[in-house]
Image 1 (cartoon, helix red, strand yellow):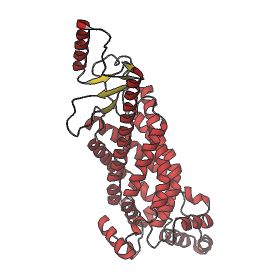
Image 2 (cartoon, helix red, strand yellow; image 1 turned 90 degrees about the horizontal axis):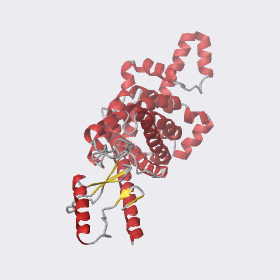
Image 3 (cartoon, rainbow, N blue to C red; image 1 turned 30 degrees about the horizontal axis):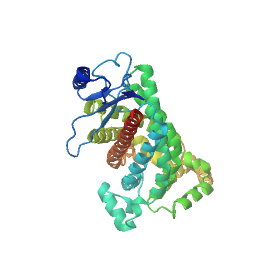
Image 4 (cartoon, helix red, strand yellow; image 1 turned 90 degrees about the vertical axis):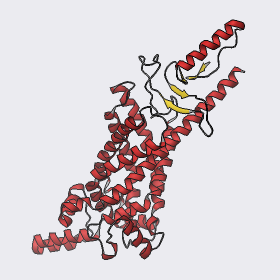
Length: 406
């Protein structure tokens, strides 16, 4: 019996006697030939029903996006990366929001260390040998809660940002893949989808990133999130929240393109049938995040400088302007006491002046250590929610089929 793109295991019971036995035998042979898989006529959904062992799930969801040529094939190409046909975009948004919040909250202490270690001229009390040394010093000298100060503003921003991020990625990825190579996975489509999703994600996350990094700084002058937001509005205006937006996009567009393309490629190697496989999601996410993080560290250093407006860096620029311009330069420097570093070009020049080429890779260790578990958590949580939603949707349809046959 077939309904809504699903095939049940029921065989016909309308014939009697020998006809019934022949029909049942034929149906059983057909099921055996399919290796226990049940396929709908359009290839929309694939469910695997196998003899269940103790503690084993009775359903392993997989998705197949078939072309007319593959719809009659016994062994179609299996693709788990999308939810079932007809699933609402809100499903992707819910899974993405939970994944984003968990990713940022769980990894926030390492993110705090990364911000500190990217300081161009750190104060004596904020000079650390490595990530663990930084965490120990922060907890010992500033209190046990200091590494998670500002996590609330990031959680508020991460929910809607990642909801749009994953929903946009899934939609564009499948639409563009179908346009380029129907029924197959396209690395180009994955990269483009990641870039477009990043534009929406960063538009929401950038203000939260600015507030978060201001509060993560050593000797941060802000009492809390509300005080930080109010102070930024009074002193630097609304533009302060988006001063690093173009730099963030310049960093995140190649980061996410490399991240998504690497993840999808590793999934093809480690999980070719695109089943729900937590270990493959964790490994693929961690390796993709580490590669993308290391490659884009120079841009992340510039973004951190634009977000924090490190006082020492501004003093260096003003001193150079005064030295270069003599009396006129000194007057200009003193008149621009409220000056800010703005733009990717100026950020690059400032980083180079203060530390040369090595300064562009400050905090690379902390960034990789942060991104590996961060992307692993994000992908594994997201794929888990996709799996749960897929399974429950299938079970609801099976129950509806049974009730409709009574």
